[in-house]
Structures are given as C-alpha cells and as structure tokens.
Image (cartoon, rainbow, N blue to C red; front, side):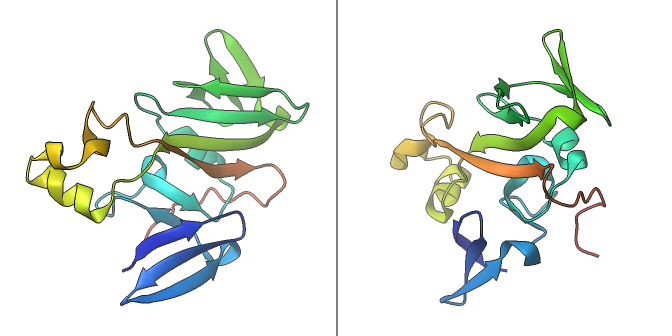
Length: 158
C-alpha cells in the first residue's frame, strides 16, 4: 500500500516506503482514496474504460459527470440517471453510442495530515477542510472512453 504522488493520462506515480513507483495506465485497474469500499465514487485514477463505473459514480454535492459527446458537445451533469445504453438528466437523454468520454469530476482527496486533523475534529488547523470541504478543489477522473476496450467487470481485490 502506498500513497498517490501524481497521475496523468499515461501513468500514475505511487510512493511506497519512500520510493516512487511509476505504473503505466494500462497496468492500473483503479486507484481509490477509500480502501474500505473502493468504488467508482472514490476513484482518483482509473486505468480502464467502464460504463458500469459511470453508472456507479454517484456524484455528490459539487461533483458531476463531465460528458463529451462524439459531436464535440460538452455536458456537466450533477445527478444523471445512467442505464445500460443511455444517460439522462433534466429531461434530456443521450445514447451511450453518442458519448466519446465521461469523466467523474470530484473533490480532491485530502492529505494524510488533513485526514488526521479531521479524525481529531480540529479542522481549524487545516484551512482546506473549512466550509464543508469546498476549498479542496476538484480533479477530473476519466472513467469511460469509447476509444478504449470496455471493461465492466467488477473491480476489486480477490
């Protein structure tokens, strides 16, 4: 078990026992910030294209799904309804076949220090935790790409 240092479209860097380990995207299933029930909602990096992850992302609060259509239109939907072959929000439905990418835009994970501060209930020591975590900022996690092979198998340790 290590700690996420950085991630981009090509690879993720994990620090384990003081050493940085570079892992190519193709070799990563998922990196999560909550190992108790790691699912799409807790994903900070995904190496797969999964429509089932789109269905299970479950954006909360200021989070949303960023959908890029094959025609170039971009949508930012906070609480969409996702079925096996479409996604809908506020009366509009688009077919999965029209979708190029879906990214889950979520709050940035808290640091180890901020996690400790939150656990001890002294959030005043960590300004990013003030105002109900809204100062954390956001990250965009690609969870579906029509250009990649789709993998909807359950993601988890066996």
